[in-house]
Image 1 (spheres, rainbow, N blue to C red):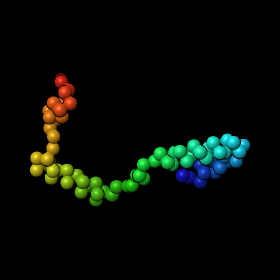
Image 2: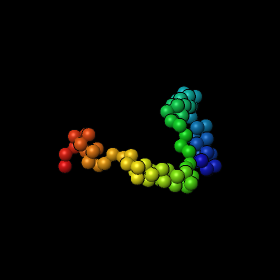
Image 3: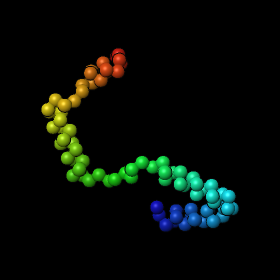
Length: 77
């Protein structure tokens, strides 16, 4: 987060009364508790490796065709 945004958040927070501050802090805690695992940046090497693994699986016949998916879920065209 940029310093300007940090400062703006601080300025607004400091203008709140105690009850409002407690409410905002609780809201922030709720946001943070609701997070799943942090999103990690994927490297280009990892991305390329995953593509190669996927291609190899397809070449080995390890996939479900579009038609099979449609059949499994009873979707008619």
